[in-house]
Image (cartoon, rainbow, N blue to C red; front, side, top):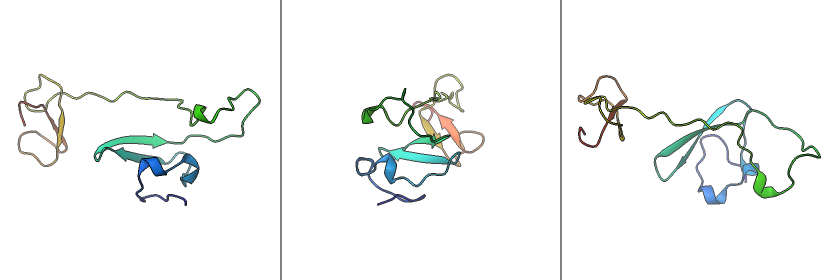
Length: 102
């Protein structure tokens, strides 16, 4: 059946056709428990004669942004590997900490 916004299912059980999506609306895909990716469907169209027919060619990624690597908010020297919410170790929330400073 269809997967509605806010619903949870295992990725292996869901096909793109099972998703009820709105164009331009941002959605979060979460895997491995806490790894989140922002996904947005910007357009849908009918296949043209020039489009690939193989199912494996879809969905097509038209834009892939790189994740921004943040520096540790405490030492300001190395890349952070932890996001901290409400921590006294860094200014602001969320804060970003490296392995040595957490």
